[in-house]
Length: 369
Image (cartoon, rainbow, N blue to C red; front, side, top):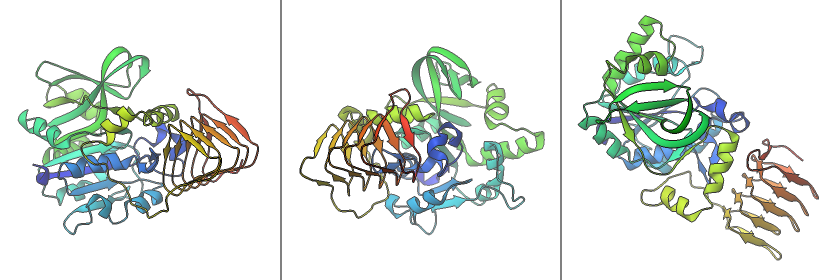
């Protein structure tokens, strides 16, 4: 069935959720867990299900994404008849980039029309999970669904989410709630959808004719009685990245071996391979409960932290509860606690910086402190 399925990944649609990290990149290329990007989880889930053609809808700030994806060979997607297909932010009819998901769909209508796959799996990059897409598609086909939406049961108080759904005993969606205020348990749509390709094209064309503006509200929520929409419950680990605080919290969860085993065990998670030297731990270095990527040089103390490739921690420095991204240089006798640095940050000697779990201290890419 996967051979008859096309993947579509939206790389920018959730950028507004984490403006600190998406200012210089797409949501899809935000670094995660030391060596991965958020798009790696969407791509790996598709590849592990046997999907061999994936269209990636771009809009802006996508140079780092293109550099990360390359030819697609690291995901076994360097193929003549499919592989990774980068889709521009506008159609042949306009040079104005899309503003909504519906406009983006309109922009890729020609692409969809020239494909031959029966199904489409649509995936955003704001969630980290290991979803069995093959099982997801079997559920979609078994229910003869027009649309299947993956959801995760959450439990929150006064939380603000983008879409929740209600289902009956058969799994059919009876209501879709866009941006509701919720209490207690609810079913959070995790922005993974299966839909028949021709049905998607018909929906897009009909929406354009009717002047619809929102795919969620105008197409799905208003038509749950006429469209066969089903909910697929995903019970595994899920990390929704909808704020800098959520990014920090879910990143710190990766220090728990049980979480890592669930997310990275069983089926593989693929990423771009870089040939880097092993990390060096010099005299005086102390590292506890941390993820250290290759190419790092450590002379100080690192506790409960995540270091990406090529990070340098100077003598006498203490890094705690922090996320330090690629090629950041930390001087001597520095103290960091609950800090997130973007790439290529330089922290001078004797600096003392601290945030908290609810409000981590963030340093933008390339800054010198």
